Image 1 (cartoon, one colour):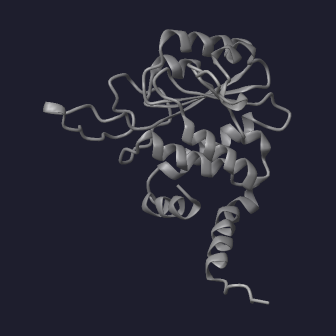
Image 2: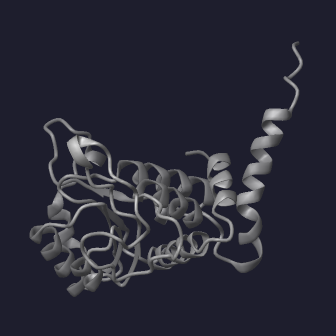
Length: 228
């Protein structure tokens, strides 16, 4: 999702609590990964790898001049021959200590092994953030959390279920869950990553996203360069 689509999404959600909630959570992320920190570790569950969020945060790090937003993706299963930046296994979590930030992103209930690693990382001094469907055990470990709508359950005869409101999963939500129409985890990730790249200072922050859209529009409207 590019900047224009994120802007349109924000217009659609204007008047709901999602904009404030995702910006608040993104502010927690920016604060946690301050330049003096120990890096951002991004991990999903055994059945879900947050590839898109890793890519978007990497883009936002470049756009905003905040390299600390560029994450290290932790993979539960590393295939043979994977390049170094995609070959970081769960053992890396054991080294997550004071100054590190661990962002857990998953629509699924985390298994006991992941929860144990998250617990160890927090005990060693890491800041833990959670973006999920509202798992109480994970949120107990998190310093801050944001709940997205759970995946729709399969309906009769394999038909898709209905997407519910945030926090209406089978397990109780224990986080910031806006009282607004449900947004799936992928959409919430787009909003959080875009907000994370915004300037954290009160003045310029209001304009940075708009400035990016202006530059994009100007580039599209500019006449082609002259031929020599």
